[in-house]
Structure formats: C-alpha cells, structure tokens
Image (cartoon, rainbow, N blue to C red; front, top):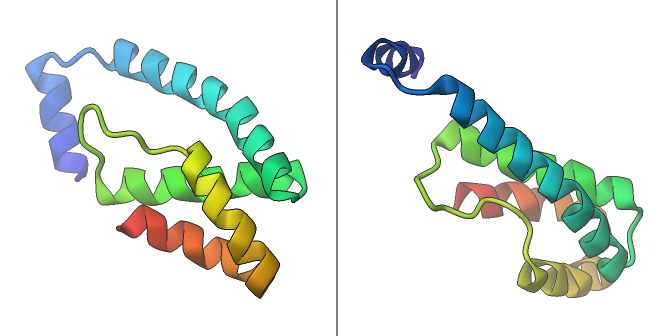
Length: 101
C-alpha cells in the first residue's frame, strides 16, 4: 500500500489536487452527516462518528474513482428502523459492515 503511494508520487501524480479534493469532500460531508443524524433522531455527533468510520474503512480497503463513500438519504432512512428496533449499539456495526461491503 505504501509502496503504491510512493510509486504514484514518483510517476508524477498530483498529490496537491488529491488532497484538495479530499478536503472539499470532507467539508461537504460534515453538514450531510449532521442532517442525516437529525433525520434518524440521533445526536449529530453520532452521524459524524459514523461517517468517519465509514470513510476510514473505505479508505483502508481501497476506494475506486467515482465511488461514493459517504452517507446517503437512503442510508439514513434505513438507519431509522435499525436504531428504533435494535438501539444505538447496532449503528456502529452496521456502519462498519456497510463500509466493508
């Protein structure tokens, strides 16, 4: 994994543009995560933690160009039922499993 990054740097990949793109996506993810956690009826911090976990799992497992790796409206609607039926303790496990899938 680190060898691939070093190879890309040597090949002339533009790290500056990648970092800027990551920053823009992260800044867009913050209000989205807060809004979806409010829809589910949870504390906004829970939405931020869940989004961070999902993004971290996808980053470690390797994303693909054009792959959406953030919360969506459909995900928030599914989490409402999960939290109501099983409680908050299942939310983290469901988030991690979603990132793995």
